[in-house]
Image (cartoon, rainbow, N blue to C red; front, top):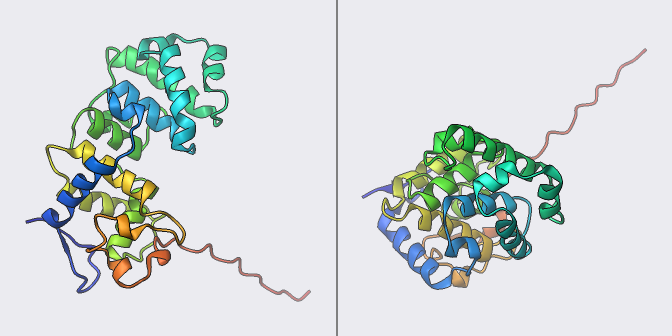
Length: 248
């Protein structure tokens, strides 16, 4: 049976079946109803993930519906005039997101026959798609076994394991991604990723406000056991500049 371990001395490991089943059960009962979850086609998942970068879920919902009506497929997005494109995005801000989406749409039309690629590595080649978004699209839309590690997931996992390493470190992100890959249910990778994201977004909240009484992992959580939830995740403090005194 696969175990999670962050290689920190004698820390207790968490068994795969102990955590995967309660997480998926909780998600099936508690997940928010969101339009991109009801229709998880690749294009819809992609649009929603880009919109959700730096924008709240409730704010995204009406924009998502309007954007799909305006640009219902990748071809329409690739051919759109810039003024029309920016108008449809107006209010969401960070306009480079939608500009990169159009660049990606053009590449998809030219190089992938108008269909978003399924494989994680191919998705990473598209403008505006990073490791998290590629993992989300490949797992949710195509059922590929690949983790999608965002800030919510990092917070959940570092609290679960009382992992006090710096989450800004790429090595830490990679380690957590590798841990998740080992326990992801091969038949439900998209549900697993979305469940982790949902847990971080609605229960394992940042700052000092986690709703531990609603958490399917509360019995396994090392941070809760230590009453140290607010101490995770850890971020390395910026080093203060050293000021040297000089005599002239």
